[in-house]
Image 1 (tube, rainbow, N blue to C red):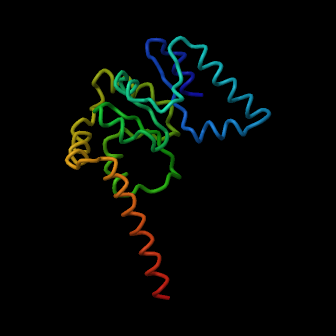
Image 2: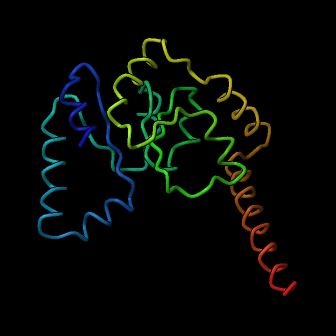
Image 3: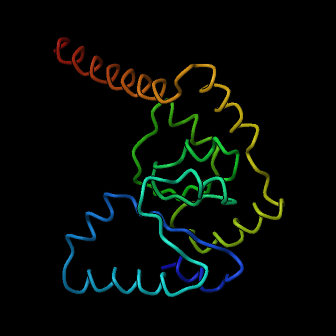
Length: 178
C-alpha cells in the first residue's frame, strides 16, 4: 500500500513492479476479499501513468534503465549490484540468517526495516540527490570477487552448496556424538 501511495504522490518517478513468481502463484490461489484486495491494488497500480509491471524474466533492460531498486526479498539483491546502483532492501525482523555469500551481498544494499516503510521516500530522494552515500565501492568489491571467476553464477551455486554441505555435515556430526 505504501508503494502505491508513493507512486501516487510522486508522478515524477517511474515505478516498475516485478512480482516474484511465488507471489503470483499465491495471488492466483486467493479468493474472496483477499483476492479483491489484490485485484484492487493491481488496478490502481496500472491506472497510474508512472507505473508498470514486469512479469517476465527479461529484467536486464529495466535494470540498466533504472536508477535504483527496492526489494523485499533476496531476488535481485546481487544481480542489481552488478550495475553499481543503489539497492533499498526492505528487511523483516524474522528473516532467515544470511549465509556467507548473503552477508557479502547485503553489505552493498541500503537496509530499511519494513516497519519503517514510511521513511522510504526520504531514502529514495537521498540516494538520487547524493545526500545519502551510495555503496559503489562495496558493490565493486562484490563484482571483483565474482568476475575473476569465469562463471559468477557457478561461484554462487558452489557457495550455496558449500554452505548447505557444511550445515548438513555439522548436523550429522552432532548425531554421531550422541
